[in-house]
Amino acid sequence: MVRAGRKGVALDLFLEKSRLAVGWGKNVGDLTGAPTKAAIKAQVASAYPDASPGKLGAVAGCLLKIRKVIQAGDVVVTYDPSYRQYHAGVVSSDYRYEPDEEFGHWREVNWLAQIDRDALSDSTKYRLGSLLTVFEVESGAWAEIRARLSGASGAESSAQEESDDESADEAEIVDPVEEALEQAHEYRKDEIAALGPDEMEEFVACILRGMGYRARVSPKGPDRGRDVEASPDGLGLEEPRIRVEVKHREAKMGSQEVRAFLGALRPGDKGLYVSTGGFTREAMYEAERSQIPASLVDLDRLAELYVEFYEELSPEDRRLVPLRRVYWPGGGA
Image 1 (cartoon, rainbow, N blue to C red):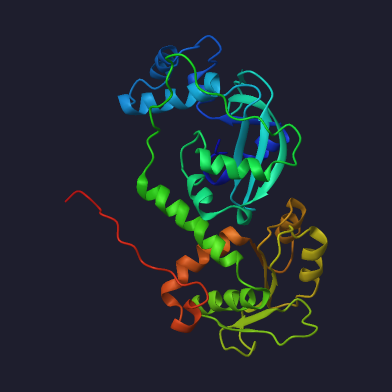
Image 2: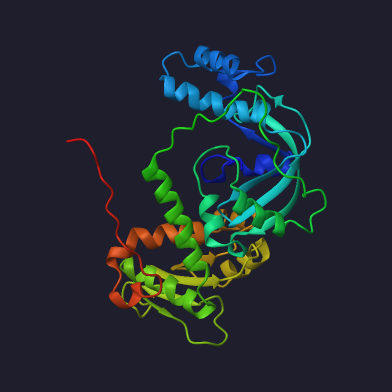
């Protein structure tokens, strides 16, 4: 498993350039001449002279995996948090280095298949939820992934066993609170994605109510892009009048759908387009250049908004996706 940076920031790089990669490229430099962990650690220490021993070991361990442990023919997986999909492929090259890239240490990958997060068991989703940059997938989770990939040609090989005495077992330094929050966020998205279409419209309306608006789901019928309506007075007489389109499906919304929604808005309206399947780049461009203010909200942002305004929701609205407050030891004084 190779994470594409925080919130999948490098995922487009992975998929468009057919690679997996990790950072520290510009500072650490080319590792081609550093085939051992000791050599990599020395190179990292030179790049980060003020780093703690634990940090040096963690960075060196991660770089060793991309430099040596991962082999051509290994199956690798990365996660797209925006669209809740795992991308799987087969490594097809030795270690490469690109000095001008932020994620400069890389391997070529033939990306072969996507696996929807909803198709995996809770235990596998938990095992894949670590914030470690690179880690070996546990056998039980790997068996399930391999079963999902059985129809993808070339994806049948298993991970290589690490050989000789070059261990990469120094764990990266991961904040357990941050990791718990990240996993909780993904589980919230699971719960929200499991809502039915009518429940999703009500879910969006309840968030708007938590934000202080009077919101209601529009009656069924030709809604002209108004699945939900919200305003300060609940009648649409006071501005802002928020017109909401809600699409609860896996597919991304394209520019044509967003353009049609924006075309139905009138002066004084504000547009909110919610798509749990996300949006294409062209769709986002349509919203950015719209003369009428409009926001596009995907599942990731919807889950964030729900947590942000959860305390303001009524008990009835909270029943759609109940949350539980958890207290974590703070430490210190």
